[in-house]
Image (cartoon, rainbow, N blue to C red; front, side, top):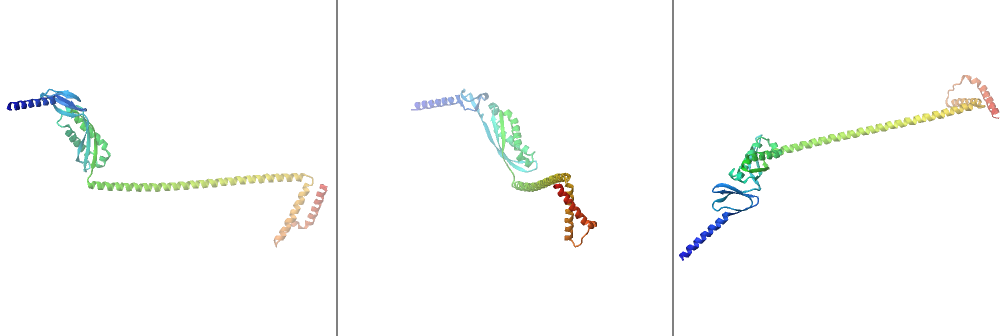
Length: 312
């Protein structure tokens, strides 16, 4: 029994050694990963993705590095701005291992080193900027952090892809002051906008009144022009009619008996007007030739006879 037990134990020990040797001999490296192999304590080679055979008890996998892009949460820290305001800033750092050997032997912990360097760089940058600018220049702050950390991480075989500020927290008193400032700024803008609106309204009204006055003056001018043209046309027509009448009268006078007819017409008008003056007023002005009225009437009769004779 004792002999069988010892043999079984030895067999189990040998089997365990074989299993351990097989485990150490066969290595499967996942995709986007790299294993660093040391032989007797010294760097031997870097294993890429796939199946690999190692020498048991001589080769060992010392480091396992991922080649994927990593996102590291940079812890929140207190930063003092150029105008001595304390703010709390946190962010996210994105990096990727490009050289697994350098990442393994260049530094003990590249993740911790990158986050620490990002924090110190961020404090330095914010210390050069006033509080108001920290919110406006996030992009520039991110770029400067990436540049500083990437330059330092090159010997580590690590590439810093980008850095993003997650949040900037201000003290309560500063938040209250900023809210009051923003409220005052909004009120100022509202007053300016209201005054600009009133100013524009007055300008529009004055422009409308100006246009109305111009339109009225243009209308009055056109009216006067039309009236003047109408009067001128009327005068022209009256003058033409008068000239035509005078021409006809002159033609009629030159006809036989024309002069006698004119004299008769004048005598009739003379008598008619004299009678009208006698009816309208109590005072009557007699012409100096009143004694010759009979002769005038006789003359008129002679004219009528001559007219009748000429007509016959």
